[in-house]
Image 1: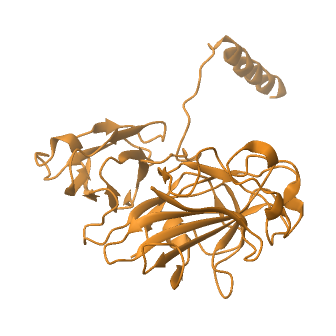
Image 2: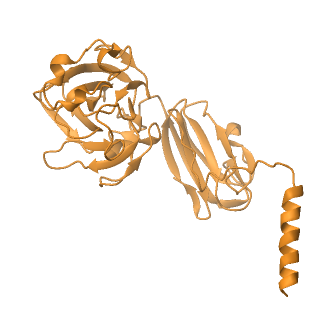
Image 3: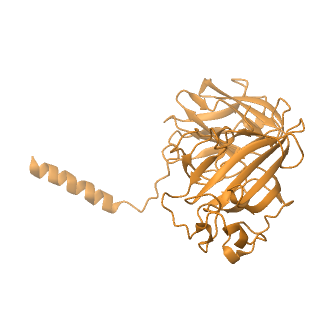
Amino acid sequence: MLRRCLASLFGVVLLASMLPNVAFAENYCINPFQYGPGRIQITLTPSGFDPSTVTVPLGTELNWLNCTGIDATVNSDPYPTNEFWNWLNLGAWPGDGSSVVQVIPPSTGTFTYHNHYNPSQTGTLIVTAHGKQASGTKQTFAVVPTSGRVTQVFGGSHKGIDINTTPGASLTQPGNAIYAIAPGTIARARCDAKSGYGRYVVVDHGDLGDGTHLFSLYAHMGGGDGSDKAPHDDCARANLDGSPKYGDWIASGIVEGQPVSQGALLGYQGASGAATGVHLHFEVMTYKALAYGGSKSQTDPTGCIGGQNAVGNVYSALTFGHMCPAS
């Protein structure tokens, strides 16, 4: 018996040594692909498309991933003729998570589709003009601003969430990059010791349709020379012109009044202001005014970037969140 087992094992090893160098396909159902701005994923599971309904701005690339273990299709309604929207007839793809089918919708509207091999599995796409939801209330499909782990949540006197690069990260080096969650205009690019924000940037994402503007705030940005160690006096030394004298705490070209695109690099996590460790303090707020300042309404940022308002939640920069502000 022992000899037979050894012989079998030897045969497997010999066969493996004779096989060509094969690159096995990635399984994105196990190791999710991180999409950047302008792309979103819909996953087909045995129970159906997830999410079954998505609302996206025109120009978004839609990617369908099949995690059912069997072949499936994306086809326009109605079943079985699939004739309403030819651009939604994307054909079949395997269920092993190795590939996606994708399309960029050519127009706004509401579009329905199904898996032709199992027509009970259906989905709905709501494609809107950029930054607008079907209801007419202006919203933006937000992306996650940085990578890291949530160390403090929204609530009480803490009007944002803190996302930490790495516990115990060096105060003398900038942390992970920080990106704009949506298109807008730089309303603030300053250093403020009094508020505790330290080096911070505010982006105005525009009028929501009722005179209210949506803003996002990114605080405690860092520098690469160790100046972020000082909790309150670093503003006196901070260069605010974007030059790298005290480290690239703010990206080149990020100045007040400057337009920025979704996913634009704003700077890097740091520990400037009233911060004891390297992290991003991130806020989302609305103002009943054209300018940043005055009376404001704070909102839980997870309503925009997804995830849960919980310590330990992990984010990956530039992955898609939700429509912002959340309905």
